[in-house]
Length: 181
Image 1 (cartoon, one colour):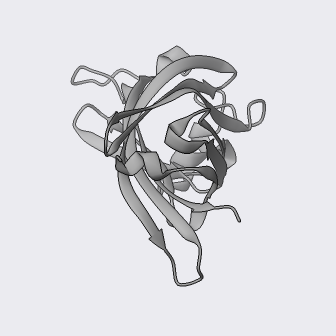
Image 2 (tube, one colour):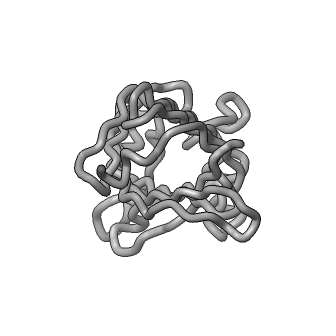
């Protein structure tokens, strides 16, 4: 039996031990990393991943790139428009085992009112019982999206050529989830 076949039940993401992050190019020469500090999610599956479903919601206002001015700009209509679209949402449409340690999750990502399909391969970190007696599972995965596909068109030309903000954004997900009793 593969490691993923052991998953059965409903799990809740533990935001204290998880990260929803992103990376994009800045000024064509460096990378900016950030994350959403407030998010929640759950996963439900039957034996052997039957009827698996994953839902995640992140609060846009919680965006954190370790720079208050940049975070404020990211919350404006130039990027996320947090006032009109306060959440980023993901809902799975298909969950399968790519191999015994990789979960392939296809689903709909909604940012700024635009929904696009994405696929994320998650490496299964395993199952453990934490010191409080909770069954805990771990996964890590990433995928790349084009921010312009979600209506984030802002950019500025650089004198040396190129642009200030890259179009490609890598979404990084480090998930620790607790099985519900």
